Every structure is written in C-alpha cells, then in structure tokens.
Length: 146
Length: 480
Image (cartoon, rainbow over all chains, first blue to last red; front, side, top):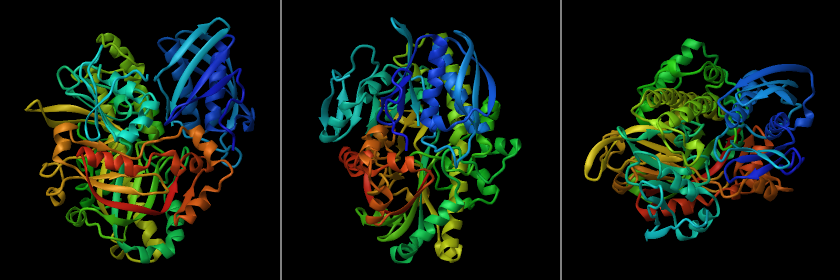
C-alpha cells in the first residue's frame, strides 16, 4: 500500500480534506505545473512507478482560462482511465496557453494484477481551486471528489 | 473559519445569524458534542456560502452528518424560489442520485448467520464492484437513452425486479423532465458499460438483522421484526453522473457570469432555475437521477439471485422485498409551505434525504399513517437506523433529514489509524464478514473514520425531524 503522504514535496503534496483528497502542486514553469498535477492525480488512482511507458498518446484540452484548463486536463486524464483503461506515467506538455493545452503522455493499459487501485476519483472539483504565479514559480490547489 | 458565529436556539438546533452577504440565516442540526467536530472543518463556512445564493428560501441548512464537502457542505439542504432562485450542480454533487435502498426478507438471523460467508461471496460474484467496474449489461445507445428517460421502470421492463418495487422508490424511480439530448457523448460513453455496477469508496451492499425496535407500530407498518434479515444497497449514477456534473459545472461557470451571480466558491456556480441554462442542467440531472434508479434496481435483482443461490431456496422463501429507496444527492421540484403559503420550490439535498411526514400524498399508501421510511446507514462495523419522517421536518427542513454517519477522519488519518491492523479480522471478531474489491477501500472505510451514527440519529430525533423506528446490525458486507 502506497502511503498517502508527501512523496515528492517538490512536485506535489497531499492536502487533508475530511471527505475527499486534495493536491498542492508546484512547478517552476506553467507546463511543469500541469505535468506535475497529472502525476499527482495519477498517484491518487494507482502507484505511478508501476506504469510502464508502452505507448504514447497526444491529447488536446480547451477551456476558458487556466484554472478551468487545469480541471479539464485532470478530468480528461480520469476519463481516459475510466473509459479507455489507459494509465499514464509521464506527461510532456507540448504547448500551453490560457485556453488550450496539448500534451504527449507515455503509459500503458490498466492491468488489475499489476496496477493496485487506490481510489476511484469521481472528478477534480472547482472547490477552493487555486492557480497562481508565486515568487519561486507556479502553484495550484485542487480538491477531488472521491 | 472559526469566527463564524453560531448560537444554540433549541435542543439540537443551531443558528448562524444572517450577516454580510447572506440572504437568509444558516441552521445546523447537531448535538452540543457534535458541534466541536463540526467547528473543526470548513463546513460552517459552506453553510454561510449557500445562504448567499439568489432566491434561497427560509434558511441554508445542514443535517447532523454535516462535513466539509465541495460547494455545498455534505449534509446541506437548501430550497430555492422557481422565479428568483437558482439551480446549482454543486448543490447536487458529482454522484447524482447517490442513494440507498432497504430490502426486507422472510429470513431470520438463525437462517442466515451460519451461511453468511456463502451469501457474501455470492453477492460479490453477482454484483460487479470496484474501481472502473464494468457491468455484464451491454447497453446499446438506444437502451441507454431509454434508461435515462425511464429509470427503474426500464429495469423492471427488462426483467430486473417487479412492478411492485416501483411504488417503494422515491418518485417511483422515474423523474420526468429528463432529456437525453442534453447529455454529452462522454457521459454516454462513461455510462454505457457501468449500469449494474456498485463502484468504489463508500458504496456497498450490506446484510443486517433488526437488532432493536423503538417504535412497534412503525416497524410493523414497514414490515420489520426483531432478528429479521434485511439488505441495504448504497450506490449512485456512477461515471455517468460524474460526467454530467462536470459538463454542467463548466456551463454554469459561464452562466453565473452571464447572469451576474456573485459566487463565494466557484463550485457553487449556478444559473437561474427559470433560464435556458438552468432548465438544460435540470433535464440532464434528471437523466442521471434515472440512471441511478435503474442501477439500484438492477443490482437489487442480483441481490435476490445471490440469496436464492447461496441458500438454495426459492425466491418466495427468500421473500426479498423493497422497504424503501431514497436519494441522497438531488435537486427536485417539490411542493412545500413557505411563510404560510403553499408553493413549488426546487429543493437541493446534498448528502441529505427526503423525510416526508405522516399523511403526505407522496408517501406510499401503506406507510402514510407513520411517514416515509428514512434509511441512515452507519459505518460497516457498528449499526444503521431506520427512521420515519415527521410533520416537523415538513415545517422546518423542507421535509429533509440526514443521510448517514458522515466522515470524521480524513482518508490519510484513516490510513494512519489502520496501519498494521487486520481490518477484515477485526470485523470478523465483531461477527461481520466483509469482502472488498480493494484493500485501500477497506482501510479508508474503517469504522472509526466515521462519526458514530447513533449520535447523528439522536440529534435528528432530538430536533424532531425524524423518529427512530429500528436499529440494524451488520453481519455481512461487500464493498468496491
């Protein structure tokens, strides 16, 4: 069982919430923030280190503004898992502006024997959502409904 | 967060006075002791936030199982005027029409306890559960549309259960005003493989016996006797509902701007009920409500099969019949008396249940004398309760009551507390046989992660918004 705790404090950390779970996400650049958010999110579903890069997938997400783009991005990754059974170990954000993100993911098909399931995530929510530039880089906070 | 002023006005009733941008006061139903836990999280702020929404009637309420949600608090109830008020996906939640059903049987403890392992294994085998679980039903897109319009009736028409079941489901298991044209392709794709699946987290099927009777007459009316075996099913609209909520929160963020609605929290985004956006969400949400009604009806059919197969008895001998089913996460048109005037309102219940009192025409005829059954599941290790709705709930809470124990520990705290413990064995020592699709679920759902549901129920009874009927004791459970 993967301990839900601060595994990689530089990329993301977990946030206490009575019913659900949240992430505080850090990135030196905006593309890095989005990539780290994806990794943090995937770590809520399963053990990321057990996902091998067997295929590559390009996705494009569009939204009205960066905050909404973050939520759409994470919910799209959840959709790919739930509907297409795809898990991603790593994402490279190829292009990003406040309304559109294009990214290349590396991962493999979900295998119940290999990938222990930690949580079913209903959605990334807009509750207490934050995405801001700070002195030392970018910061986001997202709370998930489990 | 701690500076929110809250005053006790009656036994188990607290008020947050109307200040700042609040349009109405807040009201929380809780015992003195529970209030300490409640103050520790951010749920009171959420009661205040909901009180700021346009067209809210009387008060922003929270039931005793209140805890920090997203947007509305879990346990939140608010009704809005149809002309000046709003409808909000954040007031319903992602698991639209997550709900609970109670079934009675002709069986008693002595018949079932020696075979409980077989029954639990049979339930586990019959009912797909766990993360991303896919059902054995393969819905065509035409079937799925039919599910969205007909709800539990679709299930009955397709051989899952009986016509008689429908009478004992809130709204008879089918909401009108459901329009599949309002549903995205993504939602349809998430929904089609998941009908007839339990899912994960706090969803479960549980076998209980009636441990204690508080109200002989109401228990008799509900068909419940001491030591009788009953079954609780708790699940919702699965990925279909999650996607509908996500799709419409995005639309409502824009609608809130368009209509100039100031939002204390983005998750409370909304549109006037009487607007194209409000009506579109209402039609989509009703589709998800119907999906969940159908889901529980299909699962109940398999519960019946599991009992019959495991005990090798006839369906008639098993006698698995519906006591009642109700919704936890919902927004509905209902008629209530507001300031002495009868009017139609849109009631949001987020982690709260309908609890209509005696004499209400929407309570099934067989129960009308005592009020609607209100089912309050506790954690998997202790007990659950059946209550009856009251006239006071009709007057005070738009006919609403609590929905469960409510979490006390965060998941991380639960994991810490469960470290090094054999949860299955602890439960077995208490006479409860459990099977779960995932170990993580068992750990996060440990009994002490929840408030003691008896505190919640006593606060409900103490405030007079529900009447205790029976207490149930678990003996077997399957979890996702």
